[in-house]
Each structure stands twice: as structure tokens, then as C-alpha cells.
Amino acid sequence: MAESRHPPALDEAIILHCQPYRETSLFVDALTEHHGRVRLLCKGARRGKHPLSRILRPFSCVRLSWTGRGELPVLTVAETSGQSVCLEGPALFCGFYICELLLRLLALQDPHPGVFRLCLETLQTLERGVDLQPTLRNYEVSLLEEIGYGLKLDEDAEGRPIAANQFYVYRLEEGAVPAREGIHGAMQGATLLALQRQQFIDEAQLLEAKRLMRSVLKYYLNGRPLKSRELFKSMVS
Image 1 (spheres, rainbow, N blue to C red):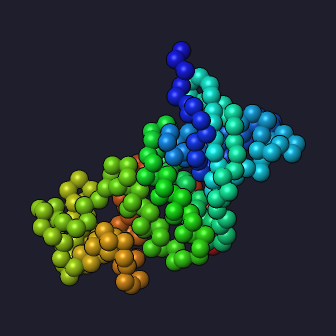
Image 2: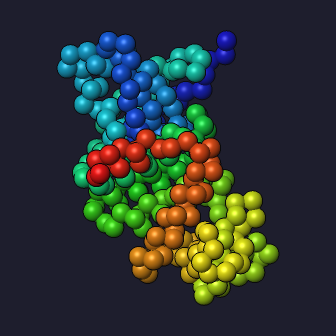
């Protein structure tokens, strides 16, 4: 069996998720700068006061190296990079959401350096306590663009410029289609342009943008619900 790809040196990474494995080990999902999303077996990471237990936490920024055959490489080196993000309250749930989208939308070992930078910048933005909703919408649009599912937001399905005062329905296979106000899924062209420019002017735009992105992501997630979203609902209900 051919040896799986692995970095010859440490690769910058963001820890997305950790899952206990057997009595003392962990499965760790990480987004690396040069090798994409990886899933690693971390042997003994839960044994006593193992130093890795303090490093391998969600949102931690680390440097990793691994080796092994097949689809489950083994972590060999992990060290902190000093950029770990600390999230609290609603921002914490947003962080879980950001990471879960990566786990669900990215294939293993498919490099996306732009996604790595986007994830790190978005987590750092959340840490600063900025308005959460614009941050999430901008992340969603940018993520889809980076992985090849970009939305056409400045032109309609016929190639005409989006008019701010016109209503549209967005169809994934076509794009924005002019529509009457009040029909299901209709939104103002101003909302599409706000998403494209990543600049929102009011709550109405944010609400329309949220509905659109939820519909788009539902399509690419094959209708499967996100655990982070359900967790947030359970905590605030």
C-alpha cells in the first residue's frame, strides 16, 4: 500500500474538532494551511497530564506533523503557534458553526490555503466581539467562493446587473431571477449586492441574507442539519 501524503515539516493548522478514541487517544480534525483538512490519530493524548491535552483544543492554532499509511495518519509532532483563539458566549457557538461547515464541506487532504486564512481571520474577528451576523454571512459567502461553489450576486441569471430596488429569487442552478415582492424566497437586489460587497446597511438585509445562505448551505449539505446550530438552539431555548 502506498504511503499517504504527509508534510515533510510542520504545517500551520487550526484544530476544528477532537473526539475521544478508546481509553487514552484522540481523533483530531484539523485544517492545515498547505494540506487541507486532515484527520489524525493522536495516541495517548488523553493519558494523565499528557502535554497534547493542553494543545489539541478547538480553535487552537498549532503546528502539526504526521505520518502513517491509509486514511488515518498518526500525529507525530504538535506544538502551539501562539495564535490560539478564545471565544465565549454566542461567539463560541459561532466558532463551532464555522468549524462544522469546514468538516462537512471540505474533503480530506484537499489543500485550500485561502480557506485556512479565511477561517483564522474569521475566528479572530469573532474573538474581537464584533457583530456576529455580518461576520457569519461574509464567512459563508467567502467559503463557498473558495471551494468552488461561489454565488453570482452582482448579475441576474440573464447576465444583467442586479438592480438594488428589484426583487429576486435565487435559484442555485441559474442565479438570481426577477420576482414579485412577497412571493416565497423573494429578496431585494440590495441584499444580493450587500452580500457581494460584504457590507450590510440594516437588519432587513441581514435577515434576507441569512435566509438565502441557510437555503444555499442546506443544498450543499444535502439537507443534513448542523449540530452546532441545534446546540445553539437548545442553549437559548
